[in-house]
Each structure stands twice: as structure tokens, then as C-alpha cells.
Image 1 (cartoon, rainbow, N blue to C red):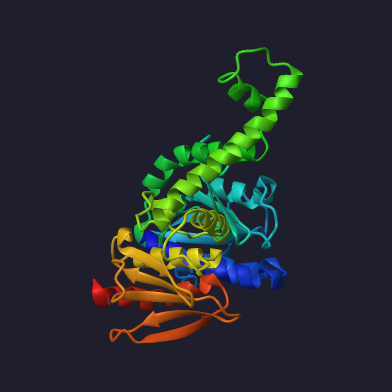
Image 2 (cartoon, rainbow, N blue to C red):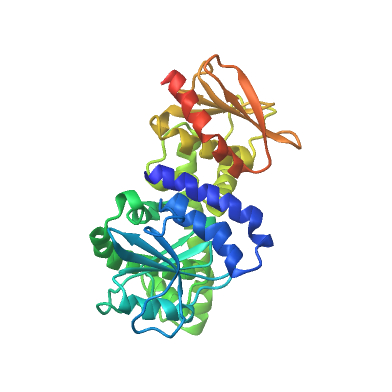
Length: 372
């Protein structure tokens, strides 16, 4: 199920990329992005009022006429409240006044504040029946953290597990906070962070001169550390070995771009007998990772290999030319993905963006099945 949700989120991310510039209202945001999220990702029927209630109104304890955009019903009770803002709008807790009031007057234990791209999930960890001010889970569709997919899956209709969600919420909340703190420090370390790290490598007094010197060194060291970690993982992938982490599959447009860039740099620095005249591009590596992520639902990731040729980038099962899964024809202005039927006849399909590869997921899986 997590694989299916990932694919649907990637499809929604492609839609966001294509349409967000033309979405001008909150209502359009709901129709274009939020309703597909509720329907395709979470699996609720948006046209069944016994499952999804639009413009939900509670009679007790709220301002007259005030509504929440959606209420999701499960087992005959309201379980999830959703408040929507215009796509691109910053999400702030001050925008969630309706959620706060309705949280206290309904049976809901989960509240979602969204702008169609970011989804902030809240519960009542700090005080019973009072919505927390900080989310326990934050998901950004256009820059998806695949490690959070199993948590999102718990909210899906077919796997809804409120107890599991609540039990995991506190850990998720603090892990998320730690990640945001670390991300900020890696981007621009503050004085306390620099002092903390400096004390572990330098025994002298922490003067202003030392602080200035080590601020530069800490920033440089952290960037090199991240690059080294990415390169280690990509060396394994480009060498035909399986990436060890479940979240290694490319599912975020931003993350995949960074991964692909590092992989191309790594490949360029490593001489290979068959690389003469062959230029492995960033898009080819990213395309390979997408096909690999799709095929992994059928076979072990280690069985998905690639060979770059002068005219196309080949993706194979078991590194066997007799088992082609796909070919990426990216060396012309119009890009194509070549797919194979059971007779190994290739058909090229034009694509304008890498996200369109996901549209051919069923065919890629079927091709794996011909050989597996």
C-alpha cells in the first residue's frame, strides 16, 4: 500500500507542478489538489457524504455559520477535520481557528491544515480534546519525504488506525522538530551550534576570532559530510548494488535532482572502460531511479540494473540484455521512454517531464512480470 500511495503522491506532485501557476483561489485549490489527495491518496469517496462532508458545520460551541472545509467520517464518526488555504499560501497556526474550535466540539482526533501542497497534521498531545499548536506530521507533496509514507498510510481509509497514529504522534512530532532544527543548522549554523561542535575538536578559548574561524569551518564540514553521504549511496547504486535504505527511491522532484547531480559527478570522476563517448546525464540517472522505484514492487531492487549507450540509456532486469525493462531516449529535444511488450518489441512514448514516467508504471511492472 505504501508503494501505491507513493505513486499517487508523485502523480499529484506532477499535477501541482503543471497547474499551480494557474490556480488563483482557495476553491480552485480544493478542487485541483485537496480533493484528489483525499480521494486518491487517502482513499475516501469525496462524493459520498457518509465518508466526506464538505463545508462541515457543528452545532455546538462554534461561531454562527462558521464551517470547516471537509470532515472525514469513519465508522460513523467524524475522525479527521481539514481546513484549506490557497496553494502557495504560508501555513500558520493562526489560520486554523476553525480547526481549534471544531476539534473541541467533535469526535475528531486528527486535524489537517493544507494549502494543497503542504499538509500539517495535528492531534491533542498537549491537552485532551484541545488541538496542539504544533503539527506532529508535515508532508510536502512537491518535495516528498518517503520516510513519512508509512505514517500517512495509517490515515488511509483501508488502513485507518487511530490508536497507532496517536501512539506514534509524539515521536513523529519531536523527530520532525529535530529534523527542522538540524536542517536550519546545516544551512546556517548559529553561534551555539558552532560552539557546541568546536568544543569537541578545539581545546583553546572560544574567542570571537575562534568563533569566526570555526563558523566557516563548521559550515564547510557539514556540506562536505552531506556530499560524502550522498556520494557513498550513489556509488553503490551506480555499481549495480541495492541502496540499503527503503527511502532511497527517488520520489521527490527536489531530492531526486540533488541525488542525480551528485551521481553524475561521481560517475564522471570514476573511469570506466565502456564510458568512451558516453555522457551519462542527470536526467538519465533520475529516470533510472524512477523506473527502479516502480519495478521494486515486483522484484528485489538489486535486480534492476542499467547500461548507458551512446543513443539511449538502457534499464535491464538482472543486468541481462535479453531482459530489457525500459530505454530512456533523452539525447534529442523530444524525450521518449521506450517500453517493451512480451515479444520484446519496443514502443517509444514521448514524455515532457520525468514525472510522466509514472504514467507508464503498469506497463513497466508488466514487463518485469514477463521475465521474473
